[in-house]
View 1 (cartoon, chains in turn yellow, blue):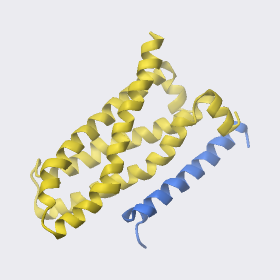
View 2 (cartoon, rainbow over the protein chains, first blue to last red):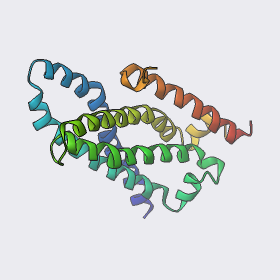
View 3 (cartoon, rainbow over the protein chains, first blue to last red):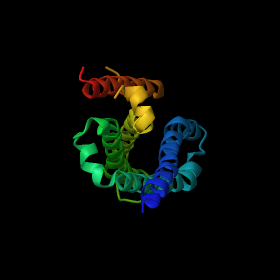
Amino acid sequence: MELVQYGLGRWLHILAGVMWVGLLYYFNFVQAAAMKDAQADGTAAGIAKHVAPRALFWFRWAAVVTWLAGMMLLGDKADEAFLFKERAYMPIGVGAWLGTIMFFNVWAIIWPNQRKILGLAPASEEEKASARRVAFLASRLNVALSMPMLFFMTASGGLFRRAVFGA
Amino acid sequence: MKNPLDSLWGTVLCGLALTAVLYWLVRAAMTGG
């Protein structure tokens, strides 16, 4: 049972997390700038039609798998991490909170607004413009949050925690 | 005032600053000072 929870669970958490954060960085470091250039030379439709929906599909479902695998890893220690009940669980607690806020951003803010932008949900041009701004800022916020999230996730275990946090 | 999240480097700097602040807070909480 521990092999599944800690061995396979951690592997799955990292696999899905790489896909989630990798696609987040793709959107922010590559696609946002590419869309600007593509709009200028009239080739943006291809990205919007063929690339963005596929990338968003893997992005949002990788977020689900990452979060669920993370919760499985925490197991019965989830309350100690999220409520900072024990000092040793503080770093992973901060990482878990940041990951959960990012997960909320994906499903409650980014995806509903992207549905309007991509024409998968009805929206006027004015609503689309507003959706673009909201989705953009939520995505940028997730890039900023991903930095401390990854720091706390990677520095939360045993040897690393003692070296980084001194306890 | 310009929103730092409008710029990619502004976003990265916000992430670094947040990491430093949270690290200081958590380390202080864990070591009792």
